[in-house]
Length: 98
Image (cartoon, rainbow, N blue to C red; front, side):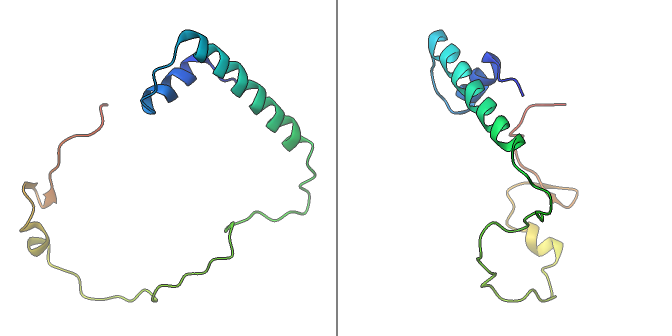
C-alpha cells in the first residue's frame, strides 16, 4: 500500500486540520514508514492453524433476548416526521454524489 500526499490531505480535510506543505510531506513519509514496518512484521508471522477471531473481547451480550413483538404502524411512525414522502422519512441530502 502506498500512502500519497493526497491521502494525507484528504485525512486532514476530513479532520479539519490545516497542514502546511512541509507537514503533509513529513506525514506522508512517516506513515509510509510505519505501514512498511507493519507489513514487514505481519508478513513474518506464522498464522497457520490460527482461527479467525469473531470477537476481540470477552464481553458477552448483557441485553435481553430478542423477541418478536408488535411494531408500530407506518402512519403512527410517520405522524411526527416533519416531512415524509411515499411512506418514508424525507431528510436533507447530507452527502454529495450520483
